[in-house]
Every structure is written in C-alpha cells, then in structure tokens.
Amino acid sequence: MANYTAADIKALRESTGAGMLDVKKALDEADGDQAKATEILRVKGQKGVTKREGRTTSNGLVIAKAEGGVGTLVEVLCETDFVAKGEKFIALADQVFAQAVETKASNAEELLSSTLADGKTVKELLDDANATIGEKIEVKRVARVEAPVVAAYQHKTSPDLPAQIGVLVATEGGDEQVARDVAMHVAAFSPTVLTRDEVDAETVENERRVAEATAKEEGKPEAALPKIVEGRVNGYFKENVLLEQPFAKEPKKTVAKVLEEAGAKATSFARFRVGG
Image: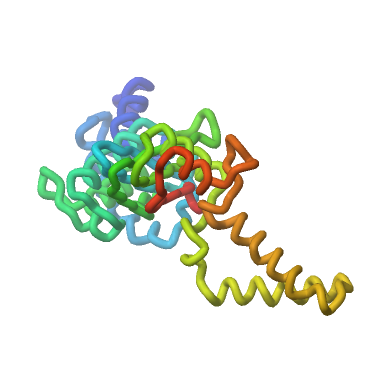
C-alpha cells in the first residue's frame, strides 16, 4: 500500500496544480515522498509541453491596472475554467502581470522574452507551469497605454471566475472618474476603434455594398438609395466607433459628447475579453 494520505494528495495538488490522477500516480511512484513526486510531475509534464502546443486555450483571466498615467493590460489563458479559478494559476498570472509592469512590455513577445529575477524568462516560467498544471498556458495579449489620465476596469462575467474582460482608457484632460466611466462603457459595448478614421477603408466599402444590396432587395426607390446607404454606414460607425457610440449611462449623448462636457479627450483604449 502506498505510503501517503489524502492530505498528502491535497497538498501536492495545491502546490503543483496537477490533476488528481497525475498526483496519485506520482505519489505511488515516489512512495509518498512529496519532493520526489513533485519532480516526477515536473519531468512528465515537460515531456507533454510540446504535445499541448496545439490545444485550445479558451479560458483564463485578464488583469488591468493603471497608476501614474500608465495602464497595463495582460491576458493569460489556459484550457479549462477549473484551472482558471485555481490559486496557482491566479498567482502565476499576477507574477506575469507584475513583470509586464516592471519591464514596460507593450506586447506579448516583449513580455515572454523578458527575464525574471531568478534568471528565467517568462516563457520558461509558463513552460514550467504548463508542465506541473498539465494544461497549455500562454500570454495571449499585452497592452500598455500612457496619458495624463489612464483608467483601468475589470469585469467578471461569472461570479466564480476571475475577471474575463479588462479595459484601459487614456484621456487628456478631465479626471479619472470620467475615464473610468468610459472604461466601463467599453467593457459593455465592445467598440473596435476610437474614431471612424481608424476603420479600414475596405471594411467601410464592404458595408456600403451590403447596405446598397440590402436596400435594393427591400425594394427601396433608386433615388433614395444614397441617403439610405449613408444612414446604414453611419449606423455601423455608431456600433463600432467608441466616440460615436451612445454613452451607456446617458444614451442620448455620444461618448465624445460626454468627454467634451467633462473637459476630456480620449486618446486611446484597449479592451481584452478572454479568448476573444
């Protein structure tokens, strides 16, 4: 009979994040020795890292924080919600986020290649976690913004999971409260660009073609088509352009109008949704 208890299983699971079956097998092989079992899990896990590279990471968390006119947003992904809400994964994400802030990383590649205090890169840290936890773990996206005012907002889509949506909003003028209100709006209404000038010309042209074809299919008069098409393209802008969206708290005003009344001008924003 193996020389370990249920408490030993629990302790090893908590320290490594590995699954129940893997933990029991490791303890069996190590005859109950925690340190040896941990090493077994690590070695076996590393062998599976390459195999896990093609797996889908649709769970995880985002962390968004702003201080002193600088905002950082990081998305760390895993395979299952079970791992996403585990203490080990959350602690790992916190460590990765702290490194992003420390190194001023503005994209995932910069963060992954950066070196931690112990000499490991973030990529090596994630590979180790991948091995012990037994799931593919990756930093998918990183954003960094700087402005006189930067606000961050995190939103939970499920009460038992960490934040799944993270937003940064940067403004000139105004105060942090109006920037935070806009960040909450961005979380809810998911704009894709700040101004209509940022919408790709091909996308706009495609919207015009679809609007015109739809209007013709509906039997609209030929003479009315230009006005109808323009109206529907403007509708696309109102749906996707942050400054043209009706503001969540005051739908009769656009986001641009609310900012103007607060003496603020939005300069950039970033929004991540886990797996999005």
